[in-house]
Length: 277
Image (cartoon, rainbow, N blue to C red; front, side, top):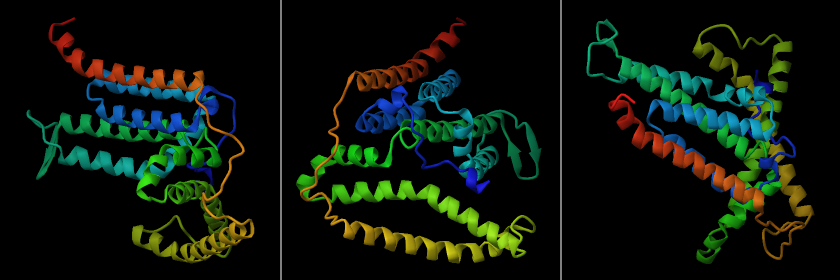
């Protein structure tokens, strides 16, 4: 299961999203996340889901890749749903009552909406950013967007580099974890049986070599950068210059259409339903 995690990977392609400027993809990803949280009405959530599926379609990525991206947060989504079902109070009679436990239809509805919101945010942001943007392009785009902050002496280049290296090393660490667990299983380790405490203790022999390997890789990366005379952004040139194109305008208009649709559904749909239309 661990080796199937695709979070942080880049899948080369020639879709509209792949060709878009990384700066525009960062901007549209932020717009997308904001309007996913703005959605309130039922049809607004349905519109969000359909738009997210449309993003997957135009990215030309396999849908199972998106499903794999949700694996790391399944526990978070289940915990969120569980928490909202049992802690959200409704106005009418509860659907289920036992002792101090009360389950209302509002709680079930809110739990479903929260799970859908988390899934859409993760899927949409992965499609718009990491899956369709190379780490180098993502670094350049983030650095160019934050360039005005250099005037107040903020280390923009270093921040962009750290973010990109962290994303780049997620698949590497996942692969390393899978190799260590396979080696431990060959020596008789059991990671699937017992309670939570027993499973947590069984992971200790995995974490120690994983941390050691991570520090070794970090040291090797630092040595390689020093050997190539890396000095940050001082005197640095770029092979390609980022330029906006009609593709970026089309992507921006698409996201603005998405935001306008969410707002209009939130504002006008309740009034339309109240008149029975």
